Every structure is written in C-alpha cells, then in structure tokens.
Length: 287
Image (cartoon, rainbow, N blue to C red):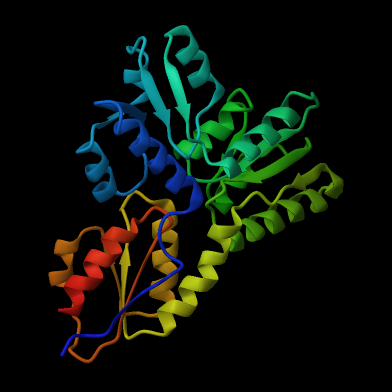
C-alpha cells in the first residue's frame, strides 16, 4: 500500500521567478546559449536543468569582460550601474526583474533624487542580489538593516525612511519598525521616521499558509535550495509548527529522512522551488 503524500498547492515559484524562467526558456529555444547574471533562481536543481539547455551563469565581474552579446537580468533586479555597463559594452539586456521589485526600485530612486537629508534604510539580507539593486538606487548611500543590532548604524539626529526587501518576514519587519520608532520617540522626533510596507503579499501570505500546512501532516518535507532566504524563513516556520519537518534540496536526501509507513507526509517548498522537484520527491516518498 502506497504511503499518503500531499503536495502543498500554494508552494512553488512566484510570478517573478516563473516569468524569468519562461523568458530564458523562450530565448534558448531559438539560440544556443544565454548569459544570466547570477543564479536565475536560488535552487541548484533548477539551475542545473536550465544550464543543460544552454543557460550560462556569470558574475558581475565576468559581465565587465563581455561585449556585443545578450544577458538576462533575473527577477531579483540589478542596480543602475549594471545598465550603464551594459550600454557601454553594447550588451543587450533581457530584463526579467520582478514587477514588484521594479516598482520598489523606482520608489526608492525617485525619493532619493528629490533631495532632502533623510537616511534611506533597507531591511534585508546584506549582499542579497535584490538588496544590492535597491542600494544602487541610493548611489549606495543607504543603510542595510539585517538585525535589530544594526539600528545602531542609524543617525537618530537625522530623519530616515525604511523600506524592506520584498521577500522578508512581515513579522520581523513590523518588529524593526517598532524598535526604530521607539528610538526616535525617545529623542522627541517621532515624525522624523517614516516607512513603507514593501513586502510582496504572496511572500507574506506564505508564512500563514505554510504554518497551517505543517500542522496538518505527520511529516513535512520542505524542498528548497540552501541559498534561498525565503526558503530558510519558511522552513523555520514549518519546524516551529511541526518538529518533524525536514529540509531537502534534492531527491537523494529522502533516504536520510525517518518516515513511518503510516505517516501522512506533506511536501512543500519556497517561492524558488520548482514544482517538478516537489513532485519528484513526493512520488519517490509514496513508493
């Protein structure tokens, strides 16, 4: 008798990633290869599939040596200097930046260039591709806040405005807002601090959905690339609500997971996890 395995219907690629991958596949159907600036998605199995089709992952340093070719910008987006370099090197860019990220870049860029002395704060992971792109809109003068300790980098004698990387935790963002607001209030300048809710709603709703899914199954197989910030965030939520949650990045790791014959297994993943990989793991687990 096959073990019961359920795949979370809300898991899998978000719109931005779907669009970037579809764009790459369409190009590769008519061309032998396509350069992509950074991993197209933070999932090594999906990257391996696309590289077998002709996708070539390059770094920003390698981009500087290219001329007269085509390069894909992934969903995370890029800072303005990437576009300037491409123009100088006669590189055609296929821009697959997520529309949500693109709107956020424009908001920061427009406000930064309207003048004023405010500090621009970005809640996110230092060095993450999206954060690098957002910082670029401030000529790299913004301050990245990755933890509560980082608020000590803020000059509370000056106004500031806070934005968030689109894939961050809404709960952590709200906690950070309260901390910064309290510091400004203590100095008598509550009106010097403003913020915008810039977290993608699909990502924000996933926390609640994944928590509910985790509680409905005996064992959770959470499928994600190890470099995915969104994946680690959602996996920890699974673990919190179901201690029998296990992180897998490839099908072979399933052999290491202790699963009973009568366990009902839930398979879920990050917004960077391909559905085909979750289906492959679910099929292997069921047999």
